[in-house]
Image 1 (cartoon, rainbow, N blue to C red):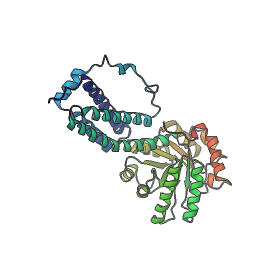
Image 2: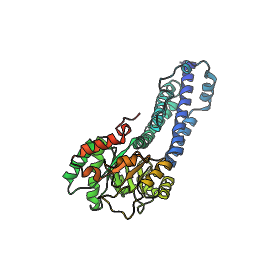
Image 3: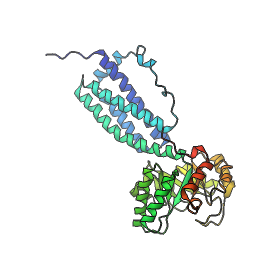
Image 4: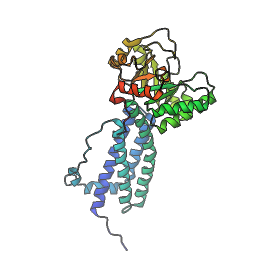
Length: 357
């Protein structure tokens, strides 16, 4: 007995979702290529797009084109309230990822009515895209969170595990935007143990975790990023270790270093030292003048660092820099939580935690 011919509507649905899917992947591919400069991810998205484009046999593609009725599609008159609003790159990535997933599911279901092999091809593409989406979202979410960050706190490994966990928990509950583990004393095993605990506690509190100087431990601990100085690894070398999804920060002490770090692909900068500090010794202080140069010229997030606390943060803000990294400014305070809250107030409303778009 012959099967009834598919309704023309089936081909119209397939055509609309085929185009929607490829368009969404192309947006994400361009994001990976131009914004992230991630050759691997851009290539995988391109390969996925081509595999979907070539999965449809010519006779079916001919029917899709024949049944297309763009002028009569009532969907052209339907608009979501936020369809033309993309507040940041993360929202753009998530919107297009959702478009691709939904289109692939519709393609798979409607393809079942005309071709089982084609339905299987769309199903395979959908599961393949799920893995790519995770990489896209993780990268974009970290950078979106970094873009909102204003308060960055450094912590050492403490004298023992219990004390370290207590300090990290107290600090994370106060909601700084970023916590960096910096400790030159501990052996590698102990430092990795501390790093893993930092990552766990920070993530539970929605705080970014950064490991100082050690891209290898950053990866092993699954931290959000690594911070390197002028005498540590270059950004490109650190990137080979931590991969494209993690953040890389660079300490800078002069505008030439800041420019170089940006060109090399740093996600953020530390700019200083600004004032004398009881935490770290420096022979020279580029100071407030350097912050003003960075504020005027550098577009990536830049955190003023060096001797900053509630008594002098206003001088930092006056330069145009809106982000600070502190250590002694909170750890020497009588009350850690109060010190963090006071800095947040001084930094302004934008320093307070916000949810992702």
